Image 1 (cartoon, helix red, strand yellow):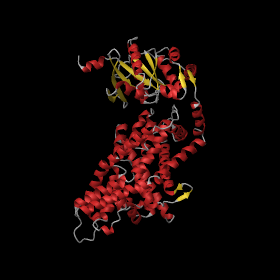
Image 2 (tube, rainbow, N blue to C red):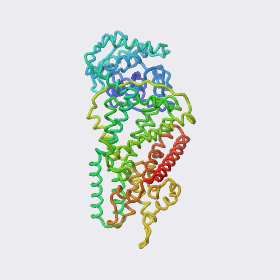
Image 3 (cartoon, rainbow, N blue to C red):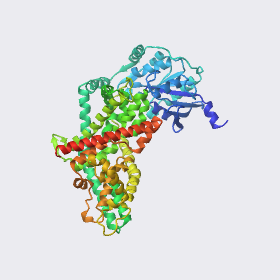
Image 4 (cartoon, one colour):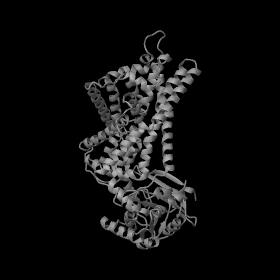
Length: 624
């Protein structure tokens, strides 16, 4: 018998539970590296399957199903879970047993779904996961009493520390040997009644010895208050953007000086020529102009990671639900849009949890309006060049205030776009959603540090690959053909890139954009940060050859070359401009065609053009 036959013959066990119950951690602990990932037939929902061995040596295939709150699905992910459990998923076997993962510290909410699964009559075992956190919070659960109440085995587990796994495997083996699996109808039961029963059982088997939950409830009365809650959220966001400039100034200046010294060192060590220009004007000037903004990006992500780890981020989603509903979106859209602040690509992919196709499509189309981290270097360099670094009140910096306004502009633009789309091309009903509040907790500083490290690595990889390669292509287009000796024409004007930009410049002249801005917009389609490296490369080549006449600082060069209305129009453009090529490709994949990516490009380009034009002419009218 070959390995493939063995895999097919092994009984299949489904891992099921609410979101945030620790299913993935338990799946990883049980299967280790023996995992495979693919899609379910006919849907873009990932199928995670792995091998494990029971105590008697028998193999079992374990399938980690998407988290859901009930067998009444509200998204493609949840529909897959229902169909697999009921044996209706195409190409999938009926589970021989079900492992129901519940959060021990949130027992009453998780038992509701567990009871619905147990009512199917299938062999089940309950994994009472995160048992250590429940004990930490002063909750003692009588496991034997809970098992008696539910009528199925209950095994305490701590997946992240691999505790209780042997006992769980023993129970799985007993369940696999129980009655053969057979598809049954979902029992009709009132959710309210099931919730009451779940709460009654949880109260009967749980003894609380700590005021932790009462403290959490007290905090939520303030954090989720309809008036105080949004104010607190706005203040947190404001503090975050103030910190991006105030805390990052010193390390950003150090990086800037380091790249300047590196460029000067290379110039001193090499004879003038194309190779020196490629290294200094292309790689060092272009890539360095972006890397100096790494401190701002890390500070932004530090705040985001802390808010997520503390449990506040989900509460922010709850606060935003009413606002989302007012523009025709459900609260489910908030998490994908929130993810888009890091990058639109994972945000767009996260819309798979939204069942309604019109709701999902709207979220995809407005996700690029969320201010992703790639825009931050663009914002930072323009703000540093044109917005004075002064305070406008106690602890209130003007630069941070402008950055906060840019982020708010993106959010407001996204909400208005959603309102218009939901009343026209994506018209449809608004659906509610269920949200579970995680516990408040102190962030794990090791996890936060790891998250920051991963973000820094991703950013530096982009700088060393996409940004470096795009910058070098731009340098080549700016460097050839070489301006004839003795000609008064600048190298940029004479180059291929300069001629292309001159041809496009009339299109952008009405909104105040000059040739150099047009040169930066084209390569920025590869990655937003490239706009900064492109401006730095143009500046380096335009002022090359005469070291005395060169302003090595991009900020200083922009101050001399641009007017304030042009700078403000450039910021407005990047608030609304179409996303990078990678984002367009993901939209094409998620919508199965080029219709909606084309629509998204057209409406975002038009929105950016109009916003930049209004900003430019308004600033001119006020004499700025």
